[in-house]
Length: 314
Image (cartoon, rainbow, N blue to C red; front, side, top):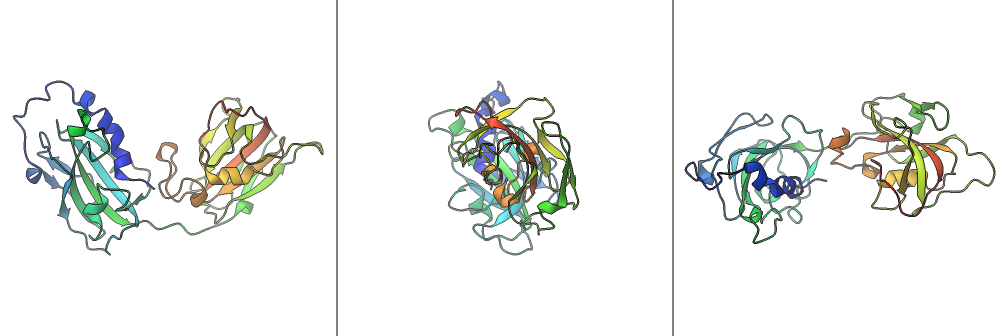
């Protein structure tokens, strides 16, 4: 899940530098009530009057009332937003054009910024929120804590999990061990219901070491998105191996489940549902949407030193 505070705290920390000099000029200063937001819900809004706006505490107002079902506490929602610095009116973040398609959880317990503004409203609602840096987690007494950020958020619909379309048997893998494999999806989009693994090339020898949870291993791997069959990560391209630890919290759960119990020296195919992968939020940087199933082909090279040298995308 994603929460608004986590999404905007990074822009907040660089706000002072991004705004540049001349921030003391308040000739264009306005009020939160004077900020105008226009445009259709779901499309990039036009925001006028943001420069110089300052709030002492989080405040919000509904710009457009939705006509869908009521937004409930705990709902996973599809949301678009733009973040604007009140200091100079500059745009700090915008997902109307670029968001990969994850879900945000409306939790009144965990999110004190956007959830209170939309819970109880209807899907299709657009809200304007003004929040201080302190409200977003900046340390009290710092310059960032006193900054104001404006957020225009469109809560479009309730996020729905995709229905399963296939299993690990719908994936074929070709190629020699240690070389970049060819991964073909027989069904697209491939959505699986549970994590499964299959040995594509068995390890040689009866004394091959079995991988256990918390082991550090050296591998080569490729990750393919079940939605479109495209590769989102691969260590084969550089030819290098990668060391990482099969430890809960360090890797996505399905990756650990799929490799524990396998033999060093084998090539393993692993299919992972979104719940054991990147969840409802996805991994936008890797082009993974919320709900995407993942396919990995992993060559288990050897057991590695306890301290991993790097952590791959999984």
